[in-house]
Length: 402
Ligand SMILES: *Cc1c(COP(=O)(O)O)cnc(C)c1O
Image (cartoon, rainbow, N blue to C red; front, side, top):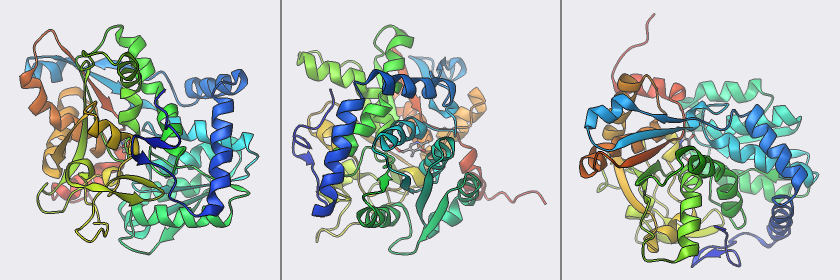
């Protein structure tokens, strides 16, 4: 499986954490290896994914979007229809079930846009666990509705006032809490980032997306596109195809052609973006070695993206490995193009997408003209756009109705 070997994906990953954290990582890894093969655990997980999260999510043929370009057939994997509006809940349910097996009473998490925070607070309410969410103060202002949602769900939201007061700083603060309370607390990391075994675990819990796609489509798509923040919805949908290609080691491992879309921000050339794999260099952040936006002295550059969920200067180590081994191809889409993608899907299909997912939609204008009519493109629609309508309104210079 897509699993770290001794904690690494080639040279990426590892555990760059204080020694006090190592026993908790070992304990988590042992629990994961034990329970992922445990009938009772997998039954409980699958039952919650089905009856609570709303899986399997539909694979939808986007007829009007397909006609718009007049080439390959475009299908959307509808993670936006998951409970709480994005793929994040798949991983939260899995990790919190593991935390229960480890007899942890308290859950902490970091959040940027608030999507991972809301998903974590939701599953904590469901399972009756204490929940503490770290969130940058800037993000709390940007995503006020999600802060209130978390509070309604019974979580404590802790404002982080250090650094740029966004996701990177919230993550650092959550790690600090975890180190202090490691005996009683499980840290639910929201993407395929962090020290080993987190990237392996998150990728595994998100692989449900790709595994469903294999059954729903019954044949290989020609292309799969997904946006890349930390990298969890993309790994989730790519998972079975990458596994198969890694196993077969055949020459013909180019199908499906896998494309990851990073946030190009205002421009790819002015440092005002979150295009980690395109513009970064390997370095260490939040416990693992991976591509990273950094200056020539190795200082981390603050990321920028119009979508808070992609606004992170790092990326999961699995993606660094996939980039170097050419198994996935990474491209960028600017803020402006993402907004165009947002409007395109909304008007043509009546689906309001998350700004993160809008980056993948926007890339269709580059991809589809190169395809043929009998080909199939699948796009991971990672989340819905309700959380983003205020950003869109600001961008369009529209005032709210009084
Ligand atoms: C969090 C989020 C992302 C980015 O995270 P990944 O781990 O890269 O998937 C993308 N889309 C939505 C809707 C999100 O909430």
